[in-house]
Image (cartoon, rainbow, N blue to C red; front, side):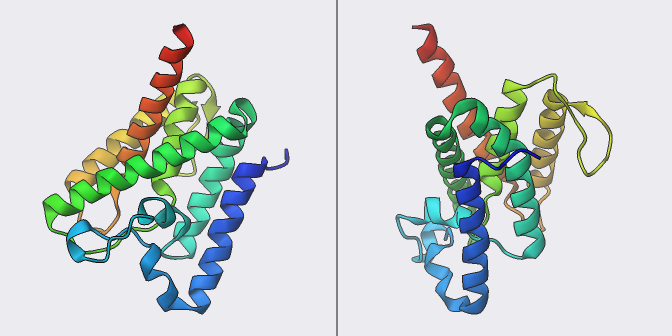
Length: 192
């Protein structure tokens, strides 16, 4: 197994460390969650800090697994600077979409998790390596990355439209949107 690149490792360690800290001191987490605008709890740093927080062990585990699977390879290809840019773009665009959706739905629940950034990495992986064969955990069927990304994106849209689970499906799609727009910008700037 190749070593985990530095930005991916730092992000993973920060998420795990903060999860442990906030488990020990639960009330400390609230100012760093992404609160809907109309709650009065929204603070300007939350569109970044919410990505380092998680709602449970499974949430944390699967986000870190995805970050390791897709992020490590992307960081090796892009380097630390560009990789960090895609993480930040995905995180902020996921937050922006989530804030819009919570405003429209009148939701007062906060959002946490690196899932928006992870979905941005997933889309990036599919754009950079569209024909790479991957085997997802569910279902364990080998498929090309581009199909995997398309299936996951479609599922997120369907689940978001029928959402009553408390999962921020539109934030996931927002993360994909941010990554797509940044990659398009990079490709357009390179052609000039």
